[in-house]
Image (spheres, rainbow, N blue to C red):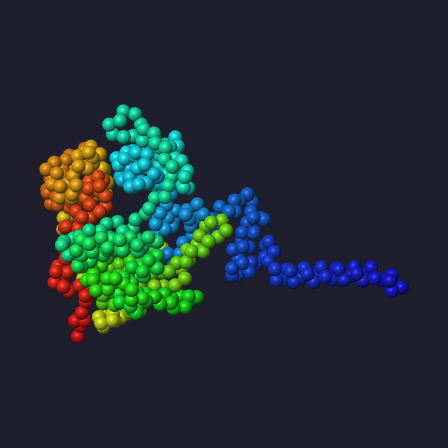
Length: 536
């Protein structure tokens, strides 16, 4: 009898189990129409619901790729999601090299114009020249393509081949060049030379993997030239690797002085100090900054200022003081997530204020600074942040960015609507490039900046530009041209020097009339580059 009821008991147990499971499943597990648990699982559930229940077919990978940047943008202005297709390109400039054909170019009239051919690079080896127009790559037209598409076509894996179709002035037919892509160095120290008999100058574009050794080479060569003082130009420097900035500051600060510290909710305070092995700890130094100086550039300037090592000249820096750590997904995409903040030795947070999810206001900050006159008057700069003290006891302010010791306003005294329109329409760039192309052979025979400048002035370059602009939609305004003449002429000559030579010669020309450079030379001559505490 006992065995006769066994199947019945098993059936009852199974039914009871199903019932209990259904009850608790309905109560604690979301079904397709139920309430979804809050927290990190919510996004996964949403994707499952879309995949299982949405009326049409959905490309889930594409949906996730579109959603990721939006999610990250709600955190802070500098956390970022980088798709796998863009990940390599995003780090190439800071890594100090990339694989490509080895040219610098601009797009003019929808065409790739070769500005410079990098020495000993792949393009130089096959005979590509400055002034060439690249109209096709691998028989696919480049005319009308944007910068991103052109870079994608010209860069590639080491050793891969690209066939270029090139139009060269004086040649009746297009030329064909077959280029094997190779390693192309990215130099972040874009110029160094002597400003006068005693003062060296170094312009640093970014803080990449090779910037420190590049700076050491520049310093060694300037030493041979007789350098007794140094001006480091960080204007427009977008930053880069914190470790590089620390290495570079270490050359100028005595041992045991703090350079920067970082701290975040999940990142305990970490301090970085000098090791005492710097070779230029007594060299008088001035650092030039402006609103384009950010991140690692602000670490460098802040360390020099807070340790009272040198003078900071220019305008308030950008205020980018968030530390990002790259976190890679299996598909090669990357999230650069903010994990901490940068603080200068005095305790100032470099990061300017921001509201989460309000990226547009943050992006417009420089425009708002311009509109309230901060670029033109030190009195317009808001210094309402907390006060901090340098090593000597000088007062510096928090609130974001590095405020220079000596303010140099942007000079707009020569601005006219004619000049603004000429710049906005790209006429200065276009005229300079076309003029260089017509006279490239003559220009390249001139060896120094004074020789090029003298030759161009003899050609009455400003009148030639006015005629060109008038024929390209900018009506001639003689009074405005006369008022803006020094500015127009300086811009045109600087562009022609760059188009026919390089950035070093361009900066040599511009530095001679640069207000921040002239102020630096005055300070060096007076021997007052190292700050003193003159506060009561």
